[in-house]
Each structure stands twice: as structure tokens, then as C-alpha cells.
Length: 319
Image (cartoon, rainbow, N blue to C red):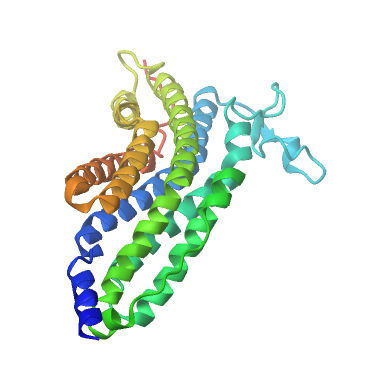
């Protein structure tokens, strides 16, 4: 009996703790939330950008407009419900709109699955008692299974739920929970690595498309704003100021590469996997990778969620 207790104590002494990962996993989760905000708000800003450009064009031309046929019952629901100039045909979606609209439900699902996974990692890392751990472990296992399903059949096959038994002596001595939290993280993070890579790459494509579409709209808006500017133009300063504000948003978007952010997300998660598998040798790489991802994700959120100037100065040339 004494030998068995000595063996249990020896195992306990070698236990790994998840506490050292707590701050970095929190940063990873915040970064994922920022990527989700960048997509959802950036997508919504497309409608605002498009409306701003349309209002500007209508104001400048004093166009006679009417409501498009697509807005009425029985109209073509694949076309935008919008105003149209009488002499023009029905308003058409921009070239990238069909792809963005078709992919949006899947993209939102992937973002939610990824965010749930990141928060479940936090919950397991911070679980302070048995009840909290049991709840957090169930959430993490469910989120890994959801990641696998979202990533496709091959990834789903590997994302089985994980449960483990622990030595009763370790639990009595108060160390089993710490080790169990670490083992749960290790098992599920390893299972999640492939699905996270797959989902992040798809998100990078969608975020790039949102950013590129916004850049096209803002470029057209700036061009329309400055087109009538010349000496004597009464609204020169107001239009030039609006053009400058819009240009600042455009530059911010051009400087932020969404696919680089999702590549950093993959690297951060791969580094988490490596650090959990080899805490002593790989933790510093994990901390560096997470810091880089968090920084890029915050910049992406700022770029895609910043609205362009919504107030459009009227066209009022003077002599």
C-alpha cells in the first residue's frame, strides 16, 4: 500500500498544469471574437457603402428615380430591392455579391463554431472545481465535434469526444483536477488542429472578398466625390473633407490583409497544440504566435468595422 501511494505521489509531482496557458488562450479567444466581428460588421458595411455611393450619384445627377420592380411582390428576389434610374434597367448585384451572399450562412456558422471552441478552451483552462470542469469539458468536447463537422467528413471522423479516468489517490490529494484539465486540453486541441486549419482558410477567403468589395465601393465613392471639384465650387471643402475621410478608410483596408490574419490564427492554434504536447520546449513560441494573431485580428476588426463617411455633401457647384 505504501509503495502504491508513493507511486501516486510521484505521478502527481509530474503533473502538468493548464494555468500557464490561461492568458494566452484568453488572447486567442479574443482574437477569434475580433475576426468574427470583422466579418459580420464588415459585411454589413457593404450595404452602407453601396447606399452612400448611390445617394451621391443620384444627388449629383438629380436623377429621376423609381422603386425597382424587384421590390414588389412577385419581383425577382435574386435582384436587389433598390431605387433605380428610370432610363436604366433593374439594379444588379455587384460582381462579388452572389458569392458573398451564397457563402454567408456557412461563414457565419463556421465563425460561431470557432468562437464556441475558443471559449470552451478558456472554460476548461479556468475551471476551479469538479462541477465547473465537468461542464467545461462537455462544452469543449461538443465544440470539437462541431468543428469537425463544419470542416468536412474527414475532420469529423477524428473529432470524437474525450473522457478519461483518474487515480483515486490523486483525486483525494487534490491534484487530479489540474491534471485532468490539462489532459482534456491536450486531447481536444490535438483533435481540433485539422478542423481549425480548414475552417480558418475558408474564413480567410471570405474576409478577403468582403475587404476587396469594400475597397472597390470606396474607390468609386472617392472618385465621384472629387469629380466635380474645381475653383469656385461652393461645396468644395465639404466634399474634399468627405473624400479624405473615405480615403483614410480605404487606406486602412488596403493595409490589412485578412488572409494573413487567418494564417496567423492557424499558426497560433498549431503553436498551442505544440506547447501542450511539449510545455517546456514550445510555450514561448505559442505566446509569440498568439500575440501576433491577437494584434492582427484587432487591426482587421478596426479596418472592416470602420464606416465610411455616411453624410454625402450635395452637389452644388458655383460660378
